[in-house]
Every structure is written in C-alpha cells, then in structure tokens.
Image (cartoon, rainbow, N blue to C red; front, side):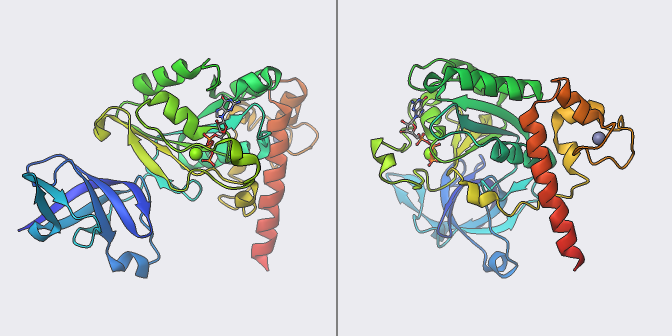
Length: 327
Ligand SMILES: Nc1nc2c(ncn2[C@@H]2O[C@H](COP(=O)(O)OP(=O)(O)OP(=O)(O)O)[C@@H](O)[C@H]2O)c(=O)[nH]1
Ligand SMILES: [Mg+2]
Ligand SMILES: [Zn+2]
C-alpha cells in the first residue's frame, strides 16, 4: 500500500528532512518523519527548505513497529518528498519559506547592532510580504541604546519588543504575543549571531533547551551556535503554529544585496509610504533632491535618520546593480 501525505518540513540537515506529516488515518499520521527528497529537485536546482509544504510518499516498508507503534525509519531512505507545494514566500537568509511573521532580533549591545543590516532585512521582509516584528534584546546592557532603537522602529511603524533574558523583563510580553497572535501561523527568528535568539526561544518555551553560546564565545569569535534552522510547535501541536530558530547571519551575507529593483526600494520602507508621490519631481530618488518629501520628513524627525541612511546605502547598491546589468 502506498500512502500519499501532506506535510511540512521542520528541519533539514545534510539531505535528510524531518517532515511533520498531517493528521489522518494512515500509520504515520501526525508523526515527524525523516524523509529524502526526490532526485528531480536536485536536478532542477530546487532545495527543499524548512517551512516548505510538501507531498510525501511512503509504504509499509517505510516504517517498523516499535512497541506496537508505527515508527518511521531514521535514515529516511524509504519516505520520499515527491513534491514541494508553491511557496508563499522564500528567503535565502535565513533559509525558510511560507513565513507569516519574522522576529528581527538585535541586541542593545554586545554585539553592537548594525542598523543597516537590520533595515535590509526589514526591506526584504516587506518585499516578501512577511510581517516583521522587531525584538531588541539584552536591554539591561545598555538601556539608553535599547530605548533609542525602540524609538527608531516604533516610528517606522513596527511592533517592537524590548527585553532582557537576564533580568526577564519584556519576555512575558513576547510570550503573550506568541500565544495570542501566532495561532496557526509560522514564524521565525532572524538576526546577527549572538544577539540571543535561541536564549529567547528557550525563555518562551521552557521545555526547549536549545544550545546557546556560553562564556567561551569570546574565544570562538565568529562561530555560530545554532547551526540549523528548526521549527518548533507553539503548543504540542504544529497545527497551532510554530516558530523557527535560525543560525545568525554575519554582515558578509548581505554583501550581495540584489533582491529587488531600486524602483521597488522606497515601497519597502514602511514609514516612507505617506510621502511617496509628494515630492517636487516625479522622478525623485529620495536620496537628497530639492523638494523631496521624504528628505523633508527626515529633517522634521518624522522619519528616523538611520532609516534614511540605510535607504540611501541600499539605493546605491541597487543603482550599481542596474549599471552592471547593462554591460
Ligand atoms: N547580557 C545578556 N546576555 C544575553 C541575553 N540573552 C542572551 N544572552 C547571551 O548572549 C549569548 C548569545 O546567545 P544565543 O542565544 O546563543 O544567541 P543566538 O542569537 O542564538 O546566536 P546564533 O545561534 O549564533 O545565531 C549567550 O552567551 C547568551 O547567554 C540577555 O538578555 N542579556
Ligand atoms: Mg542560536
Ligand atoms: Zn523624494
């Protein structure tokens, strides 16, 4: 007998994918099944990623009975991902798909937040139709900077959480948000390595016990603690919603920034929207032109200076890309 099932990839390591199979009457319904991807994906340069909704095929040979319970074989050899369903969205970094909400995490200090990287991430999320939520962690290390960052992103129109996993302040608010607003959704954490993503996941889900970097981080500079993307259920049921912990990125990963065109860029800046179409020149690039409504809003403090600086920096990268493509 051949079973065809729908499922969601919750983890992928070295070509072995853990798929949470949907509920049903079949032997492996509701289990976390180790699977392999059909060769045709590799042939077509398609890599299954965490968050993918997939079709899986298995047979009686794919599992064994352990204490009377059908248990999938660990090597995943006999359970095949036969199809990846169309993705609602798909990010390269962190490599996830079908995300509803992305927590964009930074630390008030240690590591020093790089706002340009944060803003690039936010623009990519806006462009992908993923709702960003800003998380400012380690607030006990530099309260002034935490408040400054919170102001920048609140002004930009984002939901902002300020917290510390050391003092515990702000953690309950995030946990409440997760319980109340992520029901049935798929969320993920994104942010530089060492900002405290896994620590916060552990604080929200006390049973999780994810690896977090210890005091040895200083010696192991540049090492990522989290190595793989993995989705965890918010309750004990994946269908109630899930959140992915992801490996932090370093600045380097963003050097090739060519996700969209320079014409699309202003549309990815949330707080620019009321001013678009208000500039003196219709072809205004919003970089420094006379009569630019956005530059004026920055001057008046309605748009944060750092956000406009990130915009200009991204604009210059995208402008170069266009010139390069013409050759
Ligand atoms: N002072 C302070 N340290 C924290 C806080 N939260 C986490 N840390 C520490 O920051 C370090 C990095 O935390 P992780 O949770 O491993 O960071 P991460 O973002 O998951 O890092 P990657 O997995 O490499 O992406 C650890 O030593 C944590 O103990 C906090 O609120 N305050
Ligand atoms: Mg981590
Ligand atoms: Zn303008």
